[in-house]
Length: 348
Ligand SMILES: [Zn+2]
Ligand SMILES: [Zn+2]
Image (tube, rainbow, N blue to C red; front, side, top):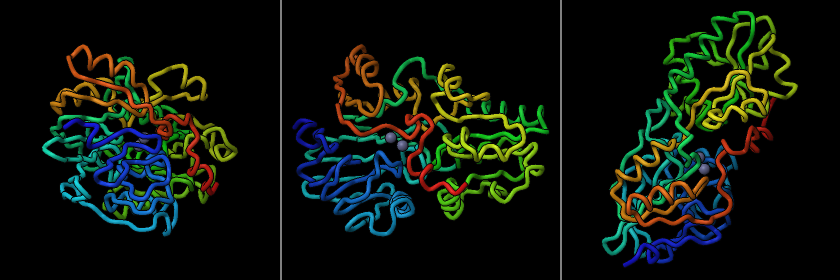
């Protein structure tokens, strides 16, 4: 029994022939298992979709009711038999509802991580380590230069700046699904209890998080606020809005951007970001290597980002490793400030 007898990388995504499904397919397929709601993983138009309730809800909010021919909810830890394979979803700690997908057949266990992080996030279930024979890991930040550090320290920088410049507004660019809500929760953990102002593009998903029981404190639409009210305020928006007309309603704004890419100073400068906040929903280099080692997998497939360094690292540890050349994944973080749907849906 080889891993390739269970899962095989194809142009449409990782395919399980014996189970008759694809995981996070980048093309339309008959049956898709979806790890989470980000648009590079969760596409519309599949025949049937199996995912957590939250992921299905998020797809519904983004694409409308008819986003798939049929849907089926799976709970964390629940095992579903599909053809000759057994499939179990486990929390991935990435965004609300995100899952790693464990596929088992003939005593061999393969885990497709989707996107993940192994650090605390008050807005989603914590990453669960799943022992396996083959681990398929993402590699968004798969270079040793990427070490994210403590998000609370990044939020402290923001709150310090707010205290220092009480007459200026602080605009924080953050992706609409997951990052924005995590930043709000972190701001609350940092002790800030004034209202937080939101760009219209963040509204739908943020309300959904609140309905799911995640307390984000007092939130206000930025569009209803007077300029004077926004002095000293914190407002969140999609990264693309930082440079748009929308930002002109704020008094002398300080622009911040919450992303793992803010570790790279040149990126922050390129976006005209004054206050880079290194906060990521992906594992950093230490998180990736720590997780790979902890799964006990003897074989590792690397996809979704910077694959070569991780493949090399696995080799030095005596692990069999290969990059998967599947085109179509690129996190919202990688779109460099443009969240295609967030921007399109934007109500200024
Ligand atoms: Zn993602
Ligand atoms: Zn992704």
